[in-house]
Length: 121
Image (cartoon, rainbow, N blue to C red; front, side):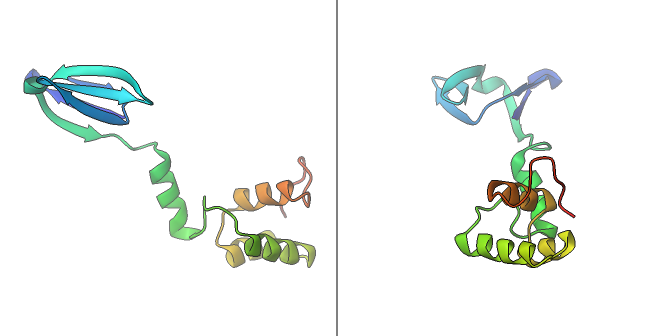
């Protein structure tokens, strides 16, 4: 999302992931489709609005869980399986794997080690 600050203290928020320039206009695009266009002379500034973006969420999660949102390696899955089968607690799994509780529970379910309605203890 971009905030486009225009002259006369006007602004608009544009859900864009790309911008191009076309004969004095700035064209805003989202997933390959045009979503907005403003005269370049009227634009005073552009601001990236990322307060709810996944990038910020990932960065915040990785402060405490360095492997959060990363792909699981086969070695990590083996470690998870071994630890879980040996009775490791939720906190021990979080510490050992550097991942969030939800990511660990999801992986355990995909490995068939935790039932869909079962919680990680």
